[in-house]
Length: 490
Image 1 (cartoon, rainbow, N blue to C red):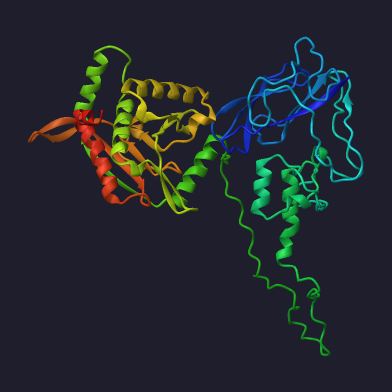
Image 2 (cartoon, rainbow, N blue to C red; image 1 turned 45 degrees about the vertical axis):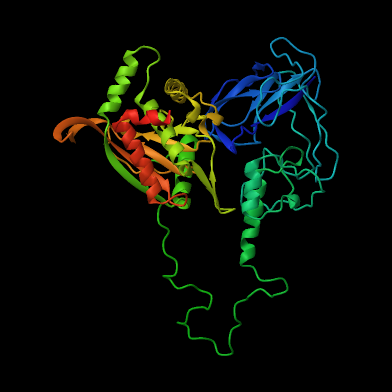
């Protein structure tokens, strides 16, 4: 006999509430081992292979490729051999269960399994866990439910029957999805008064949505004890036949519903959705301002050529600009900051975690170089190259895409001269760099052809005034024009 275990999408960290299924790595009927990756998902941060902590036979999969799955929703069910409820039964060939998961994902750990703690089932009647038939047979591992109670596979859609309201006892709530908790908070839904339709009384998103839909008419319903309004009784003298009925709307009161606009619809999800949310939030919350300047980058390019000709690891232009940024932030630390409006404080940060924009097939991502101020020029160049390659192959971890304090955006690679960057929320500033191209320039009192670049700087006006922003940008331009200026800070 085998016990059917349901594996749900774990919390992947960094505040993520869901993921998109990119590719299934197993089929129904496959034998999987402990910690074997079973599905590749795309979060708002990166691509992640999700390992299953159970070993056995896959009896079901939930969700097609391209589907959005919230944290806590089922991914697969596995028939675990040996009759052990915690997956630690005797090992079998090809699906050994060694008593613990070796991979670390938030939501399950690496130690040997402990006694499982049951959630309190709000509905009457004891819980029982059934067993599955031989691998490949029909799935019979769903938890028992009370008569008439919807299971998590047949939960009514939003707007359907109102969920039964109960009062849960004190203790842990039967809800594991951060998305469900957030939805409940946004709509003032008391989760302790909901009866979950998921396994063992688990409260699902559909339960909260039905509760919200059920309370929506309450805002216009009469107060308790107030009689409902009724149509006026006919008067002793009937109204003229041409008079409209009191409750009949005028023919022009309801305008025809406008048809939905035609065209291709592209879902805002994954990386594209995360970028949309972050940029929209930046525009809503940050009072940004921009300034820009043209700079002669001829000497900077000459210095790079000389460095690379001397041997050793190659130095990129982006690494040179990154080194200039860390030196400028040392002079103007108020720009390496974030704003906490809850406490009405500006938080100046001790380390420079430098993000740089990288365009990939999956969209724009911003890898972060940790403690960039401590790295040498060669170290910056190597780390930028490593993170860029990981971004292009989709192997960046979520932690490598978060926690930045300042962003460098080299949009010159697209062949454009200037831009007004949108600040990468919750940072306070971003430096934009256009293309470096030959242009006429007055050099040493004479007109000459020089390599010119436009630098644009966008900053949060709450953290500083224009004098600080202008000073920062002018120092950056001076370092671009005269790289020897950097020696004063090294």
